[in-house]
Length: 227
Image (cartoon, rainbow, N blue to C red; front, top):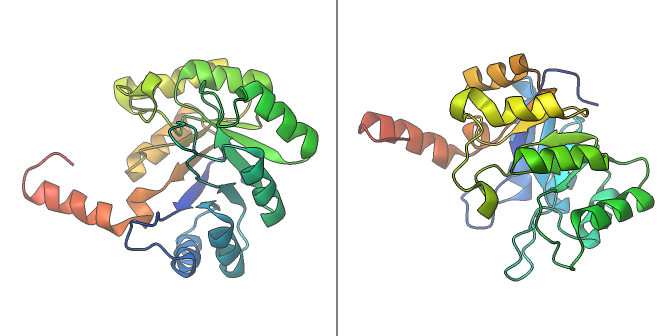
């Protein structure tokens, strides 16, 4: 399992992105390992399988799937949970926001079934507000994360790094389970800072594994635009 202070690299590419390929994600994970990554976060069983063929690092597994207009899309139902369990991920991450699941269940109902079916599986809560993180902590998620801050209706104006990471500091003060910082950690300085604040580990994604975003950041700086 991840050690305290771990760097976890998110190796993901969606269908509309240039690097969309399980083979490429496997090689990306290998490159991350060579750079010192302690773990990988990955989306879809196909990518997880390809990554496992390249590295022996612990994997946080998710399956992103949209069910109509429902806002919950990260491991939203037991169908995705079962698939990740079959894939053998170290940690299974799922949406732990206040939104109702696509099948009409509340988070508590969903999580209770997950625990009953997979009592030995580690679960990570992807949240968007401090209240959601505190609730996920109360329910018993093994890891709490602010992954969805800024991506939900209830957090649209929020940013993890705003006000010296106030959202993160509040979560750390109120949660008993380990907090893994994920979401818009786009510099080594931010990664080091959140660990210094007390996070158990940090996930970095686009700043390492999405070259189109990295290129855009350079281009914007050259042209004097905000990145």
